[in-house]
Length: 603
Image (cartoon, rainbow, N blue to C red):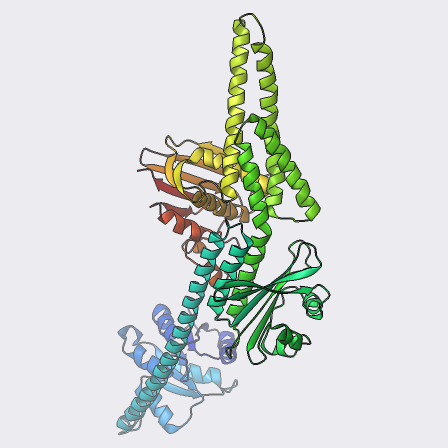
């Protein structure tokens, strides 16, 4: 054979058949190519222009007969042989193959001892022909097969469209539920009254799932009983308490972490009858039991939710939705007292210098109280870190005020060098007061107080410095990770909501930290009409193919990509928030790490 061996394309949907053909013909010296369906086969045939196409007739999508007809309509394929390779051996099938443009016919299963010779015979000039007068019958047979095939494809398309509409409806429903849950989680943050928290969360859960009854139990502070609350259409109502030794409580505590029981699993459990006696569910209804573990001690039961509704079983997404509502309820109730205490101590910090020392001691006392109650929450850690950070400016105020008192008590006029020292002390006192004032206002906003959710004039440079300091205090930003702050923008005053920019900065830092960087650079620049913020990290690079979808909503509903770093999940929320300010956010490709740029109009 010549040095340039003929190319052979095998269009075959069965990989085992293809491997046999490929092995036999490759050993004979041919250049082999493979397509697993008709459409891909047509594209590959036009691209490589093979000398011979081995064409299976029973292909998904386009049938082999349709592929042969399509290729024969293209003049570029006039020199290509097409040989049908199929298990259909009836005379009508052979005639249909020939009338649609095939040059020959090889039956399956192929004979390994004869196959190479059959292929070489066709390449050497062999052609099969229809008997005279059989063209009309063959064409009618082909037409009937095309009609049957089209009807089958139409039914498949209709069924696929029906399934697609069902999936679309389910996704829209999930999107609606998740949007409402997101809105609830934001609205519930500043609420401090237990009754209002319970009413909002349980009321929305009852509405979302169409529940007949919904009862919530949580462990009392004494640890000796569980308080009960029933959510009705009119609001929450107190119900009978449960002792910690009650059999249903012991059974719920013994369940594996993360368990949620519904349907048969709950009907066949030992406490089913006990739940009926307690009025947790109706014996003829679909019931649900969701245990809640303590966030500090997983083995300990914090509380549980019990619900039921008639006839309709609980779907997996509804169980997940119930668990999310329960998590928001638990976190909000645990943190409500801490937020109130934080607001009181933060207000004390802003009154005067004397109140500053009192508030500092109150913070330490609050930290000790938190440790005694074993409540390991984020706000508790923030108390400790902020108290430590306030020690420095408080110390400066003490030292410099003492030095000023000595100078001011002198009966004679101060010397020039003493006046300079007095001015230096006053400058340091002003700087310390400004630092404390900024941290206190940022702390109040973080706790949901002050003007955190109302529009105000913001100095974005001060905001960025304070938030970076608070994030370090919270432990979100490690102390060991350097953050270079390079603020060059000539204007930084913008009218907006403080909590919006707090959320945007949190999402940007979360995205940067996911790359496990060794350093982060936060810079600003711009002109008279625009203010730009850039956050650059030197962590792992992001796959270029993922950049286009970085700001699409609901990233959790999309299937995960392969290995490598992905854009942060909060970037889509950043884009939505900035849209309200007519701002934009973009992520730029980098050889190492990532660069996220925000642009805000200043007019």
